[in-house]
Length: 206
Image (cartoon, rainbow, N blue to C red):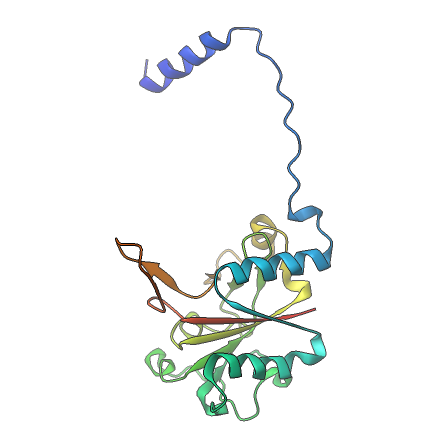
């Protein structure tokens, strides 16, 4: 008999044959939330991670992207400072911002910011999922510049991780972003920007 079997056997003996049935009440979760409440939950979770969330209507995405870049980079930034994932709609792009053309990944670090879309976003965990598609861009694009601006559309927001996984290609190179890149040392000193962008701006359209 293994130690595991012995421990479980003792538990069964202690409980006896007549074990009381315990009613477990259902735990309300994000699946029961209305679409507007899901967007609010996502924004709340993302802000908990020290990221910036800018809410807007779909028509306001271009202006809101510019406002997010102003907040992250300061008023003096130029379109040439921002590299854009190739599948990002033209209307969302700052005029004159270059598209990622597959250049060597090390050259992406020269840009101050990246603009991408997402594959999906998880309200419960405040997680943005990028899948390597043209809209999300390749993984290096979202990791090397110091600022990441992601546009999330309302229809892309799902309640929880199982819902998100159901939308994703399991073979895709998934990158899950929950706030700016951060780590801490043995003294619990938080350091941002070590493994990815120091600043995350989420444009939430819906």
